[in-house]
Length: 286
Image (tube, rainbow, N blue to C red):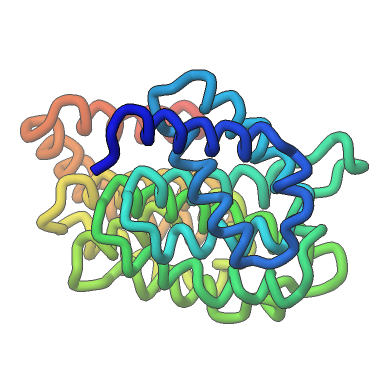
């Protein structure tokens, strides 16, 4: 245990390091970035406002090394013991890999990382979600997955078929959505709900599979998964232009409505969210 003086000295050292941009800038290896990112995340999530501000400034500096930064975030999600830090890393990965960076000619950080770092993300991000044991953190990882997939497909679509760059991802997500583990199925459904909305054209040959995924999860033992199944159904019907496919999806309407009512009875707030997606669908069809 440290006494008060030692603790003050330790905190002072951290403050000095955090407020020194040169210290961050000189780090060149992913290992050093990972260690620094862990300190930064802990500082930002802490209660000391001064340390938080210093860590936020240091985070901006770390981002000037995109590859080491992204690798460090992936490492935090994979290995850090604190769920709050893993959640923070997933949120930053989603925001920074997919958002437009105005000061860099509208480029996304995804365009700034090397093919090796991109492969690291594509090969491991779903597995990190499957490994995660805390549902709220898993949801953050799922949100990161969905936005990264949409970003990759958007970037690669400009030069050919983006499925060649991440060939198994859509199949992997659909398979995950019918996992016997309701937590993993929920993760898959959460990702799929967004992909069906933004990448609908790539699911044209998978409509029967999507129908079965939704139908199966409407009977899930998880009320959250039932709600997600309704969200997937609404997005699928809304985004599908093929009239024959839309007609086929109508076969699920009675079950969707029955499930929505059951959710409302069980959990009014969750049910209201499920009902909202159906109302939006009805309004769009009017």
